[in-house]
Length: 95
Image (tube, rainbow, N blue to C red; front, side):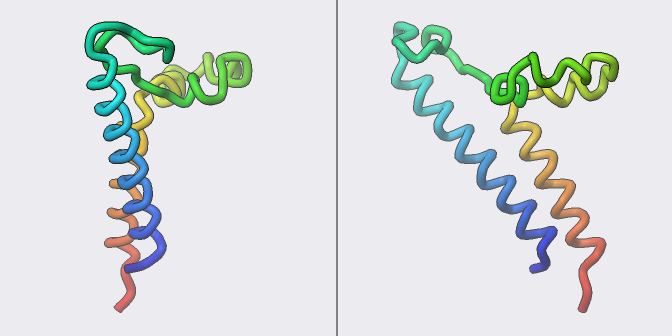
């Protein structure tokens, strides 16, 4: 395995961990929202905007595609980035 493949698999692992914690959290909040701020019994999707904040990403408002990437759920973004790195690892594989 090369470095691209390792980074891609790492991104997939982080994506799976995020989905796992979201699933456990939504199961634990089965009838009420609790104190964690998640919707009652629901799934709270985390995005880059939630982590960094709107005030730091104001410059991205001019680019529609970049706003879409920054508001995309983080587990989907990490899965796509991991897939991109795995494909790059296959293309740049040296034997």
